Image 1 (cartoon, rainbow, N blue to C red):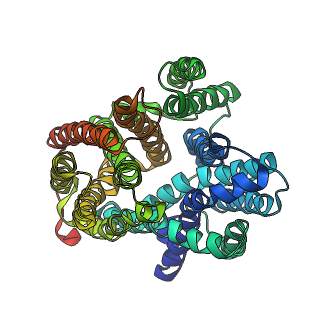
Image 2 (image 1 turned 135 degrees about the vertical axis):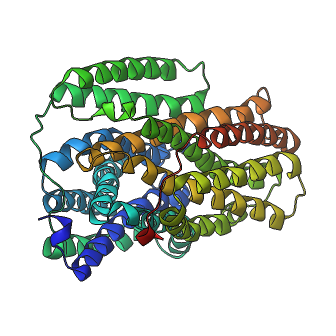
Image 3 (image 1 turned 30 degrees about the vertical axis):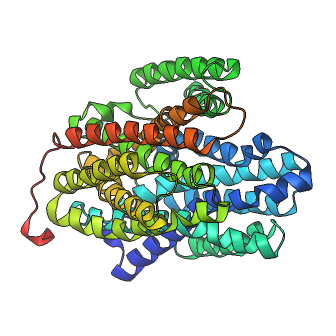
Amino acid sequence: MTSTDLSRFHRRLLVAITLSASFLSVLTQFLLITAFPKIMDEFAINSTEVQWLTTGYMITIAVLIPITAYFIDTFKTRTLMMSAMFLFLTGTLIGLVAPSFPVLLAGRIIQGMGSGIMIPLMQTILFLLYPKEKRGYAMGLAGLVINVAPAVGPPISGVLVNYFDWRALFLLTLPIAALILLLVYLYMRNVTELRQTAIDVFSILLSTVGFGGMLYGFNKVQEGGVGDTAAIVSLFVGVLALVLFAVRQLRLTAPILEIRVLKVPIFALVAVISILSFSLLISTETILPMYVQNAQQFSAFYGGLIVMPGALTLAVMSLFAGRLFDQYGGKIIAIIGFMLLVVSTLGFHVILELNTPFAITMFLFMLAMAGVALINMPIMTAGINALSDKLIPHGTAVINTARQFGGSLGLTFIISFISSAQAGSGTIEPAVYLTGVKTAFFVAFLFAVTGLILSLFLKKEKRDAKSG
């Protein structure tokens, strides 16, 4: 069945089911963070060990993303989505009853397997359900749903963990996942086109070692610095495996990831811009709560509060950005988005002090998130529109992979300036920490300027009369 065979109602139903599944996947990534102290107490583990609940989840997603193009080409949409939701449901159930930390971590990894399939599948389904002139709106919906999850996750988990056991977080998501799985079984239709794609086990192994090794290495750099032996070995092995993976994909007649999409100039440019934008998003979201707690000496509650208005701005603006893309194309709104990021990151560098009012910091963050919203989904849509429909699964996989790993590298690089400022200090000194934060935001400002310059080279798309 093709997307044109679906009624308007059924099309909207498929979109609602797909977005709901993706929302739950993203929400789960942020739910457990506030529960870490209680988990540490129950299982007698330290902060480095408990962080693996997030790191393991991210590594699993990152390893699966490059392989999803093969899955989408090989399996029917309904079968693949049911498999993703079943994995997610199984991981959630394991986490709910976990008697030990290793079992809990295993549950998180299985959850990550479902999420790693779901996110690229969602983007592919939306691209195929909507014609090119409506894809901006479709991806605006995706941005709205995906960006709401980080905004509502911490408050929801904070309330539940405050009044109930940390297992309540799994109990919350379990029935929702079961309901979505039932809806997928009843209403999902096959909208992707199956293609002859041979499975190449060696490619999957190289992808797993390469992407997993690099993300693990990035996390070890953040923990132990650039001189950490495990980080160096992991990054070296990861880079070597990725080079071999790329060479092998170019030689295979039916690669599991068609990296030749990067030969399309506009797509390659979009991939680089996406890395810069995502780096700015996750680094700003990471730095500000630490600034509030370590420099301004406020509690973790205020650290979460400082980013909430910006996260909501990102969610709402994502929908408007999709409509603007359909009307004006990607170039002009990407330029405006990076201009907002240039202003906000420079503002953080110049204005932030130990006694900076909350309102100013919140406003600058809202400005930054409005800029990110004007870039993220619209720029991805512009890149995917440059590809043929048969290459859409590979295009979404390549861009998501580039964002995940490029963003991790960008985050590590930017955050390293805070660590450098603290070097040699046994305790956190607010004034020293502030210096590191201001330097990090200046580096972020340079990232934003680079993105602004690159966005000038995007082609202005011609919009037809029907598309506004």
